[in-house]
Length: 119
Image 1 (tube, rainbow, N blue to C red):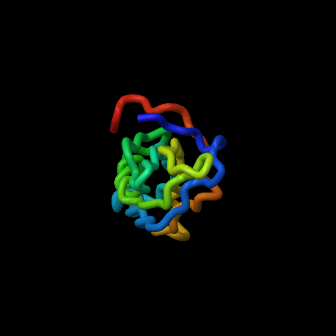
Image 2 (cartoon, rainbow, N blue to C red; image 1 turned 90 degrees about the vertical axis):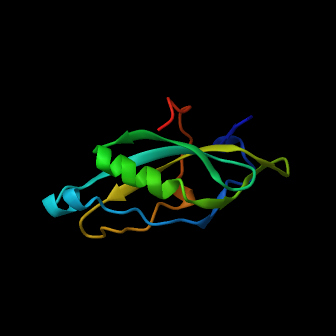
């Protein structure tokens, strides 16, 4: 499957559905904050494919963010008027003020490195 970096698109993928991350109970109970960055491919149908953890402060945040992002749906990215598979990454922040904070918007999505082994 050919994949295009977000910087090469005429129109970036637009979120249609974004589930909220679940704050891991054990970390919430301990007052621990952190984040996870999830890389993924948005395919030509707008589905998330092959999500991977780019980095995370805690494994529990990585797992929660991975589960959340894997359910997202997008309007696919366009290049030269055609739908293309797009490599993306998004940060998911877990903080105590907003334990179920809304996911980052498309404006915050940045290109990422190629995925390592699958999650």
